[in-house]
Image (cartoon, rainbow, N blue to C red):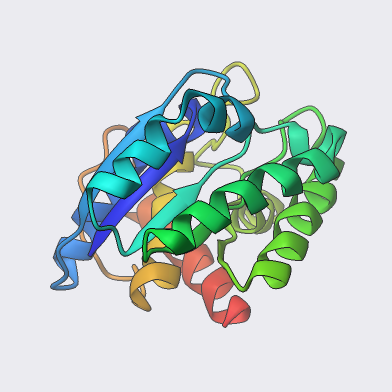
Length: 209
């Protein structure tokens, strides 16, 4: 499977595509991935730079994953939807399928998750795009567990555990596989913590399907 990721540090931090590739490998799948990332970038900034469009036109991808700037779904969902529609048209023209990376609320404003989730699922439904509900899994995990911590010290970016949880959700949506039972030697995480992340990811993607 060839996947192009377009986003910012929420995708780049801890290298979510590489974490996903490891999980996929453990289930017998090969993921060929490329990441186009700019710190703090919105999808409109990516669109204007046109690097992603050029990459889609020069390389045949199965999926293109779009990650919007983390607060835009809350502040201006209509603008976010415009950005995604622009990309979706170009993605379809290239022969790939659109995937939306539904991210998480900041630590100090957990109530924002509903707006983020609604913004992604609404446009996902409109376009028939796949939605990877990582933020929904975060919300579920934070409601059940104190550790491992998912937010980094800034209350925004993901810790390794947070990125791993997102990657586990990607595994369920893109490959239809459960991460439960995949051995992992993630730095600073116990096997029990890894398993708790895997279980929540599986519960979230099963619910999605």
